[in-house]
Image 1: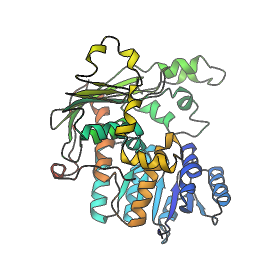
Image 2: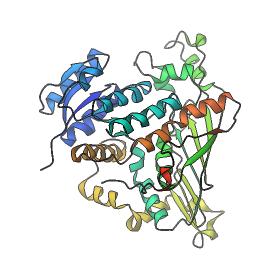
Image 3: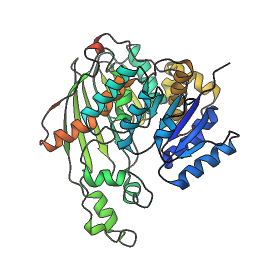
Image 4: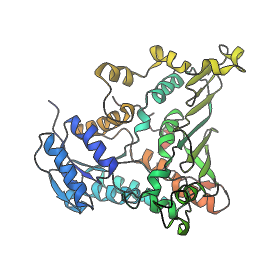
Length: 404
């Protein structure tokens, strides 16, 4: 029988509460403590836990009280971006597994601190990058590893999501994005696209990112959005957002591949992570959900629209084994089921006392893109080196494999 694990959840805003309700409690994990700065959020979480038939949790506004609990195996950190690394480090020092939500770091030093604390304590930590478990992302990874894409040359991705409503109402909704967009200009949310790309390119596991260049557009979208709604935002004219509407970052890799990622969150647009993989034999494009195979599709190169969504035709043969098993069991949870998979992988690592599938070195490599992009933008798009957090071990580290 699987060992019961006990966790604490730190941060109970919209994301924390939804994960608690849709993923954590349904996975039959014992939630022994909940923590948030706001009492109403703590009470809402405790109510969900009671409705799931569990004992009343510790409710606290001080995360240190959660870490002091001797019977806590792990913590889930779903608080503001700036808290992720500090709390994860304290959790590792307390001997707890740390799983935390996605987002960029605030300095390269913080990423080094995360790595050093892990190396000193041996307590694993994992950024819960759910997009590594996307069905199409894993199918493409499966095809790449079977050689169908040939040699990979270039990958693209982005976080392209209209967040004007969420950011502009951040004060009343107590959301951290508002203060970040007022004060920082950077690629602030790189990991949704980078996670799957890093897996395709074996980043940290035989390859690594070595440098980046970032440039930013002006910041106009949020201001116009709020000015057009003066009844809701009477101080809109006094606000000066720093975060550019579109940030483009180009990354070079040790083996010569390039990666292009885009942050586009304050203009009107449809949602997309813009995942693309370009190889010498094939290409995949998320936005029209298509795969172009050399020697098969060339006749349609000028009439490609009729082949949009042809990627669905590859599921039968190339669906990743993780997703074949998942579809049989039934897709559950939020974000098309990927939250369920990433949390299951984390909880299984905690339960079995094994390393997490996305480890501290993977985590640091993705998170450091944010402060380095900020540095590059401030320098007019100058190249910035990306640290090797593995200290050379990337050359021999085993290839990443998703855990079902």
